[in-house]
Image (cartoon, rainbow, N blue to C red; front, side):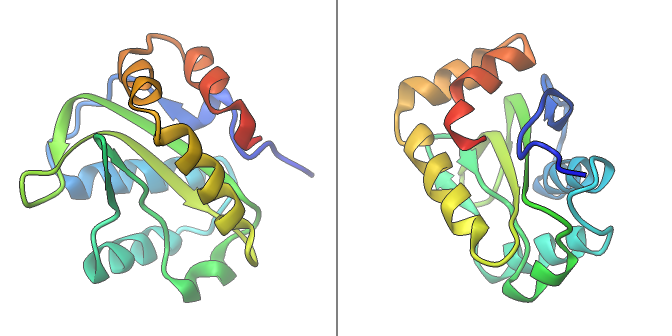
Length: 145
């Protein structure tokens, strides 16, 4: 069965998370529940975060698993977690949009580059932070499909 890389069910709006760990766990949980990755992938997301922050600037973090986590990926997928009040990713870096990524082989690089293009425009980030429906975010990221 082929599942879309990003669909409405992969998006959580208005998440009320208090810590970076809660935020990453939520982004990973979506990937698990929607069938993209095995449960252990979430641990690999934390492992990756411990190596170096996935904070990208512009209120965006892109948590993903380590290189060896690819074997836990069933198929490529994205999760989007909107945290309107923000969550501290350390060093005063506030994240309001988390984009969880799971990719097989080198798919994640292609997905990451497409996401980066969208996120490079501050206007797009502001639209994602202000979005009130999943469709608004899907429309902004439709190039990633």
